[in-house]
Image 1: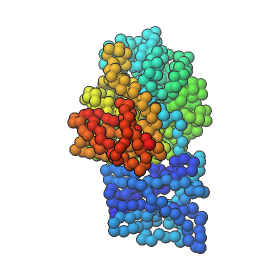
Image 2: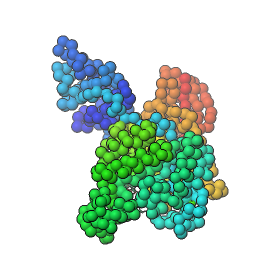
Image 3: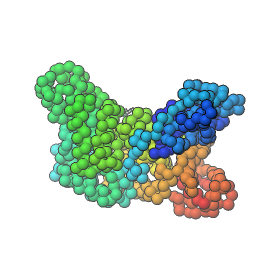
Image 4: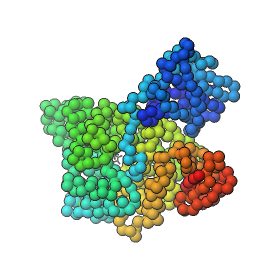
Length: 590
Ligand code: ARE
Ligand code: CA
């Protein structure tokens, strides 16, 4: 038993309240090292004859990444509090692991030995808006989706799609264009739109805000935006805006005032200015986003700045009824700011979704007091590495993706913003080297995975493009030039996910096969009456798989959800032949 590899902490993804009365407990051990684990637990105040009263519950090996196994169980302590330890056994020994270390015998004379979940306070339970787990997002970069009104086009606007996007060119996309195409989005079946910034700014991407309370005139006015929100809501589509609070734009009034009045400016503490006079070249002498002089970092610790930005957060929710905020460069803004931000916007609309843009481990922001989710680029990279780039094998993929899952609590994973690409990354077409079968299979994976998936505008019709700015091409509306087959594929996946909760967030996910010879994976999701079996054949050969079924659970039927074919189960397994880069979803019922 490799004790050094065993890890548990009574916090974060290892011990958390899943809901008002259930605790989830996870312990990590070296892969394939331990045979069984029991959770030993009790109420801290429950003593009898000088001995602490405990119970035992076996833990299940939930999954593994490349180095570790993860063991899991859930408990609903009667008085919402618990002390606990672990009984671990391999072929040679059984030991007890507690907060104070390892013991050969269970110490029952003092609860101070044990891990402590002091009390399950309802207010501390991580709670994201309920609608998010049933949402399929669509990301729109407003400058490039559709031009519905040439009168608001910025000077020098180019003909739609006439040339490649550059960091500075404009094509005139706007709200009227988006409203005209809401029926298209409704037909696709999506239920939320994430817009990159729409507030007044100088660039085509609008991440350099000039005025947080104004819509950029190239997109339209506030009335048109209201109409966009209400027309979307009518179609069951929620709206999320991008909040760029880490930095302002160069032409933001407060920064302009500092440029003009230097140390005398009443806004001098709104930014992080290292010395006066301010210089932008060759290097800015104030903090910025990356080293971009036209994006001065805002001092969110300054109460005036804080109040100003909190009002921005409240204003667009209160006056325009938006449903979510995506927070730009969220990890470079202080935690205290985000805690207040959450309170303020949720006080106006309880079920606003707060999504941070963080590309790295984000547990620190996902404890219930700050964000509901982060843009899950960890999911993105594992998924692209396997399905699009062929950079990793089947086994490595299932280990990498499980690593992502076991980094977070389950209620966090249910609302994770799972994307394959965005305005900051290469298009999936390019990443997959334009292989349509691989792309279709990858989309099938994304839309059968827990979380809240997002489709980047145009991916559904085969839009191409390399990294920023290449990935920001004008949407193609000429149907002759759209990949209709891909569109129908995405549409069908979205509908299937909506109609089969197991394809979304219902049930327990397990990876049951990952084979490097045949390069296939099989994963399942199961609730108390149904089992979903997903098979992905990521190889150039057709392959036949034998799917084992536990007949004792009473499964008697299986249905191919994609091809809509039902079969009766006669033996404890069934055989499936899957074409190269094909996939299957089987629903097993009793
Ligand atoms: C422009 C040029 C780029 C150039 C860049 C360098 O277009 O080609 O590389 O300048 O200065 C916005 C615009 C961009 C613009 C940028 C700066 O959309 O077009 O780029 O402003 O003017 C990190 C951050 C993450 C950030 C990405 C871009 O952590 O927050 O970098 N993403 C947001 C938005 C962007 C936006 C900004 C921030 C600024 O989504 O669109 O850019 O408001 C690794 C790292 C990550 C890193 C990621 C991507 O995985 O771990 O931390 O993200 O790569 O680089
Ligand atoms: Ca326009």
